[in-house]
Image (cartoon, rainbow, N blue to C red; front, top):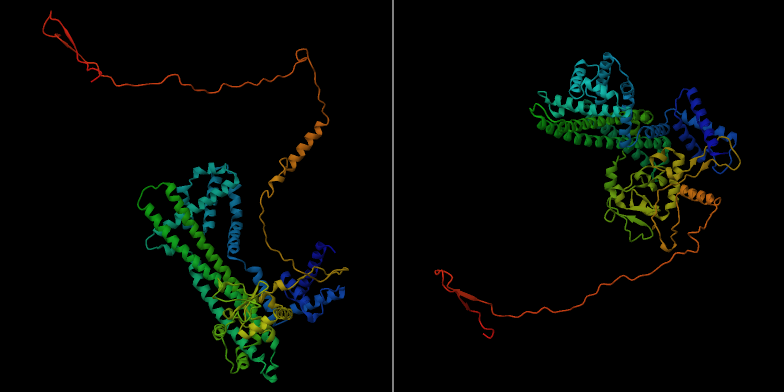
Length: 621
């Protein structure tokens, strides 16, 4: 059977189970049904063998078992699975939450934006209507005021006219659709910044008064609600743990074990899962509070800078003030995103409440108190403190790798197996969940890290880790909610899509493990083998092939004329003159007396005689 056909068949089975549940008055999702099919197949008590070819009767049995599981009433195990499926479908990372918020905003504004960008106005009335639509778009995107409020509309219209008067609509209409959408967003940011600045300028209003009301109201309320719910779940988990710890102790009398152990374990798994989800939501809520605080501080500083820039000036250059308005608008949008994200987290926490109702009905406060009797209820922190004095000595167990806080960087951020639960206790105490203490020592086995509740548990687990790992997986097959709670997805096979059996097919298919890898090599390890005529471009090779094929149909012709008859090309080699130097004479110098002559009788007498006297010194002097 092909993979595509098998996938369509399993979808039909899931669809049949969903429809049958609806007929019986229970609305279930396809994701829940698919997980339940996997849980039923993995449970060894149901007798499904992954290596055996199933018959139609086996498939019918599978559907009936799934329906029985899904129809259970007041079942903590089913509620835990439903809680896990709901959380997986509705919870995601902070980045994806923000992307979803932006997509929802774009989808809400798409119709208004389309009306503006696709409009073809011809009359003055249509032009006025288009201008009002632009104002509505700005109000909806900014979230500052309601388009139904007349004062808000007038305020936004006045701000828009100062930036984008009616006369600019003509130039706006000739733009491309993408350019129109971009200009609408730019106008929204500018107008929102102007309106926020005007609000801050009103007497008696501070920058903190401009923070979205949804954020100021939701931030403390949601954080307080999540913290209180987390305390309740933790308290229940500690009490269930104390009861099971007493009942699973080897010294416990058989008369005390008449209580429903299975339901107690299911209730413990239920509240532990709820506690884990609340921790994730509370961490996100605190991160929202941190981001909101940073945005508020930046918002206030930008507002002060804008006030100092504008002050009482009659006119300010747009190149100076518009970027400040846009920055103010971006910070405002960031605050709105944090408020919306807090609202989503609050809704998720509220929707988790129904999934912990069954364990509360089965085990009331009085019932739990009766089971506890005089047993001590220890918190997770108390257990950590009690076992902090125990420490593994790596020198005594050299056959295994142990990580200790003194020798390991980022010790508190290690990815621990079983979600930080002691695997040894799960096996030896019939599914009891005790938190492991990393400071005892973290066992590294096959690149996976394991923690334990005591030194004795660590030593015994390390003596045969493969057996204990297999036993934990077997426990999870009996209680499928442990697959998500202990994060055991990698240890289990995936359910194959096949309701109609074909020869050679099995029910379980091993999961494909994927990883990203890369390698780096030299461009030319051996340059002597470089092919200068190599071409990587296929089209270049085709061009050369066509050129060679075309040459086969060509013929070379030659003709000799009278002028070229018996002529050949001659070559003559010459030598260029070389530079040469010769010396023909030599410059010489000598020192001789300087000639001096004195004349007398040049002045005073018209007819006087001039006497010349030679005063030059002799050469011999």
